[in-house]
Image: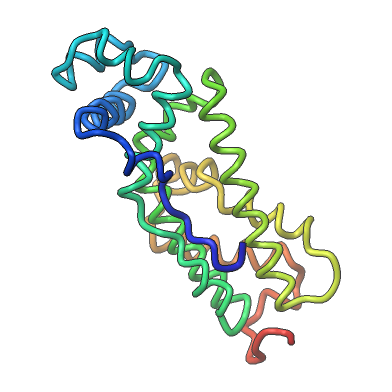
Length: 206
């Protein structure tokens, strides 16, 4: 997991041009009106293909969501895993995480705002997988700088880095994104205790 890059599904590159057009149309509609309100007929009309064609390409909701997710993920800013793990101290790592997650949340906001995971199992599983991957990365990061088990602290960091908190700060409370990033760094470090809330001059624990 240390060097695993956050990349879109390989299934996307295996789709035909017409299948990719259907996936792109699906992504557009999901951003505009949400997955629950998007029908196969809507997708066919947007993609310029027949309804049976959409069904033949993606006969199940999971297949359609997989292609749509791959299309959206292909344009997402990558999470710089290596840079996060190589940060000289936790403040630097937290700053990189705050910036990176801010960019990711901003990119995914048109789709994430619909809370479709409440109605569509595929999206719920997708988000759960992403949370688990991020938590594993955070455990690895914290273990480089701190002694003892880090699972609880990693869970706290994952929660603080979530889309829900980002949206509350940036949209509901209308904080400038730069201010929200700085606040998030302080929150991440405060979650580890007072000794971690101040800048550290030491490098990673060997």
